[in-house]
Image 1 (cartoon, rainbow, N blue to C red):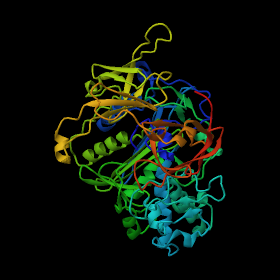
Image 2 (image 1 turned 45 degrees about the vertical axis):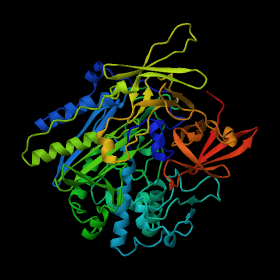
Image 3 (image 1 turned 90 degrees about the vertical axis):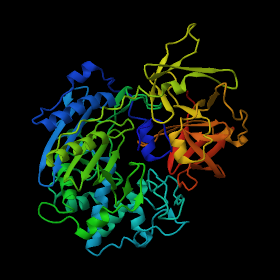
Image 4 (image 1 turned 180 degrees about the vertical axis):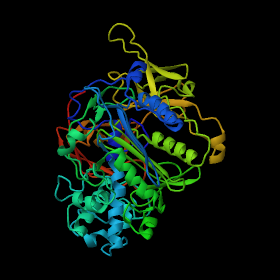
Length: 597
C-alpha cells in the first residue's frame, strides 16, 4: 500500500495506515527524530563499499521516515551476505537492534502459507482448482457470484471482502462476494486465514506445527515463530505506533510503544530474524530448493511465481502469484511482498534473475513499508555480482516538500463564510490558521504531502482529524495521452472531512442534497480490536464517507465501501437510537459510537 496516512478504504491494511490499536497508545516515548537524534542512532560497522553505501542510505532513510529501529538480511543464492540491526529495539532503554531480535513480518507470512499448500499439492492432498467449500464446508461465506477455489484465495481474486476476521460477532453473518471469482484483484486477508485453516486440516496438525515441520525446520530457521505469542516477547523488538491513535498521523509525529499482540491468523502471524529470513529468501532464489531437500517441486515453484493477475497496489508493473507479488526491477524478474502489522512493517525483494535478495523490517507502523531499502539493497548486490558500478540511491522522499506547492495557494471559502488560506514557501505548503479564539492568529501549520492532491497537518493537535483533499477542474481533454502532456487543471476546491471549501473560480454546483437518513450515521466510532482504531463518518456534498472512504448505499443501512462498483467491502449501521446509529460494522469489525471530539 502507498504510505498515505488517510484511509482510502476501510480495510485491515488501510486501517493500519491511519492508526490502530485503540488500547495501546496510553503511554510511550515521544520519538521526533532530529539531526542530533540521527547522529546518536545505533548503526552497524560497514565492511565494504556496498555496505557503506547502503548504511549511508539507511542513516538518511530512518530519521526521514521516523523509524525507531530496523533489521536487515541480505543473501545471494549460496550464502547469507549480511545480517544487521539499526536504531533501537527499545527506545526507552536505548537498547540497540541486533540480528537476534524478532520482528513481525506481517503479510510476508502469506508466501509461507502458499508454499505449505503447494507441498500438499505435491503430495496429492490438494487440488488448487477445487472449490474450497469441498474441503471446508463449514466456512461462513456466501458465494453469490460463483464457487471460490483455492487458486482464487491464493491470488486474492475470490471476491470476498478484506475482513479482519473470518468469524464475525454475529453467528449468522457470512462474508459475501462482490464480484465473480477471478475477475478482479482485491486484497483479502480473510482468504489467507481460510487457507491457513485448510493447511491445518489437510496436514492434520495446527498451523504452528505444520509450518514448523514443513518450512522452518527444513530451512534451519531456528529463531522464527510460526505464530505470535507472549512467550517470544523477551526476544522481540518493541513495536511502536502513533501516540495520538484517533487522528491522522504525520510522518514525524509522536510514537508510543504498542501493547503485546497474540496472533495465529495466517494472513500475517510469523515473527522472524534477518538471518532466518535470509535463509527463506535463499530457498526462493533457488526455486524451492532448501539446504538438504526441496521445499516444493519445480512445478509447484513455477505455480508459486506465475503472475496471475495485475496487482497495482504493489507497483504499477506488479502482478500477483501465490501469496507473493511478481514484478520486474531493471528488467529482472523479482518476487516481492510487504507486511504491515499493528506496530511493525516489513518488505522482501527476491531477484530471481540477479540471484540476490533482501529483507527489512521496522518496529513501527506509520503507513509505509521499508520497500525502498530492500529495493536499493537488491540493486547494490546485483551490481556487485555483475561487476558493475554501485548505483547511487535516490534521496528519501521529504514529505514536507512538494514541487507544485504553488498549485494549492489561495483562499477557499465554505458556504457559511469560513475560510481556509494556503501559502507556499520554499517548495512547502502551509495552512494559515485563522482561528482567533485566543485573540490572535495561531502560527501557520506546515502541511505534509501525502501523495496526489492530499496533504496532512503536521500539528498533532490542530486540523488533525482529516486530511486536506484538494480538487481540480475537470480536464476537458478526452484523450488520456494528451491529458498527460497538458498542464494539470487548476485547483478549485478543498475538503477537510465534512467541510468543503471552494475558490473564487470554482465552476460547479454548490448546493447538494444528501439523503435525510444519513444524519443518523454521522459521528465518531471506535473499535476495541487491535486492528480497528477510529472511524469518523460524515457527509460531504451529497455522499457519505467513513474516514475518507466513500460509501455507496445498497439498502437497509448497508453501504459498499470504496470507489469500485464491484468492491466486496461493506459498511452497515445498526441500532438507531434517538436518531443516531450506535454500531458500525465494517466487514465484521465492530465500531461503536463514542460522543467525544
